[in-house]
Length: 162
Image 1 (tube, one colour):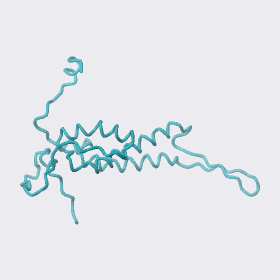
Image 2 (cartoon, one colour):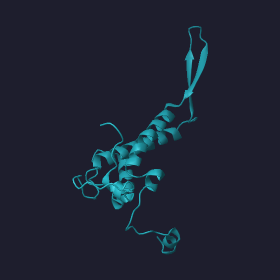
Image 3 (cartoon, helix red, strand yellow):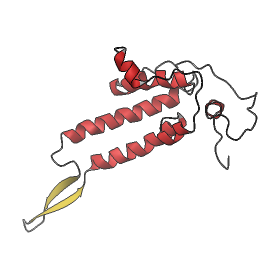
Image 4 (cartoon, one colour):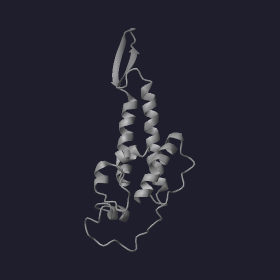
């Protein structure tokens, strides 16, 4: 399908339907409940699911039909956590050295970018579209207008002991 991909009706409504086009009555409308967490998610992915899913359900952008897409996001975040843990163990996070010995016995040092940094950059690039889909970036969130949600003042929250 050519052209811009359609914006989900839930996001249109949350954004206040800026285009003022009628919302289709024939579009599937899955229930706004948390989908079941897939059993194949690892510890880090499950932690991310439990952290983010309730917020997205409350905003109405995560539905019963979005489980596998959201699981993909959680797996990418898990991969990022694993790369970050591996980077903490590295002496030099940005560069790696490869020492080779030639036929004459001379050694050569080749300095390259750490492959973990390349993986980290790739994972961050892959995570961004998922975040945009679910309204989890500042720019995508700025387009959302949520009504009926309780506005929480951080100072009031602190004073109430939360």
